[in-house]
Length: 250
Figure: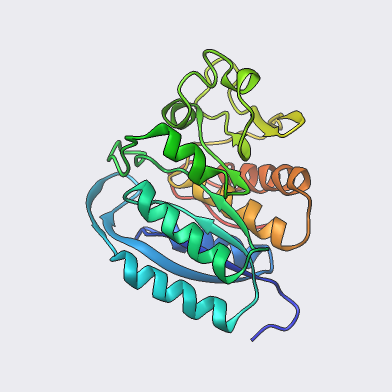
């Protein structure tokens, strides 16, 4: 038991390649010197190049696991990854908030894999907004934000609608401004520009970025600081190799 490190919990899928999911999160937590725990929402058969099978974990089992961890540890931040439905997500969030109202929640909305395997279908956008309002930060890319909030970028959704949470819009899929992330907060929009590092695409990079932010928040950084420092971390990860699997280091 570490007395000096904050506790961070990943609730996400298991990727046996280690590039994404809870294995990637735990690697990231360790590099940030926080104590990481993990609860899996799904077992998968995949490599960095191919996604084959997913088996979802029973929600009751996940909720019992969450209760066990929160009864035993003071968990500062929770990072959530793949989920099969928004009801599943909602019940996870409700459980965390009931057990520890001050715990921060980050959700990386992985709606499909990098190999185009679809995880979650959205049927009710009003319900999505209600659920997301309980989250401190979501980290979608440009494809995912348009699924969650149709018209967000094309019609500047945020100008007509009050955002229910902070949003870090990742720039990896934005061809006009590749690598420019945009942090939407209640009264401010902050652009996070890429460095001049030569970066290569990585399997699970979104998992690594969101878990880096979760760790930084657990270390008492502000939302702005946490996102800025996570961008530095993810660029080191993206530039570490020329393959789809990267190396973790600070």
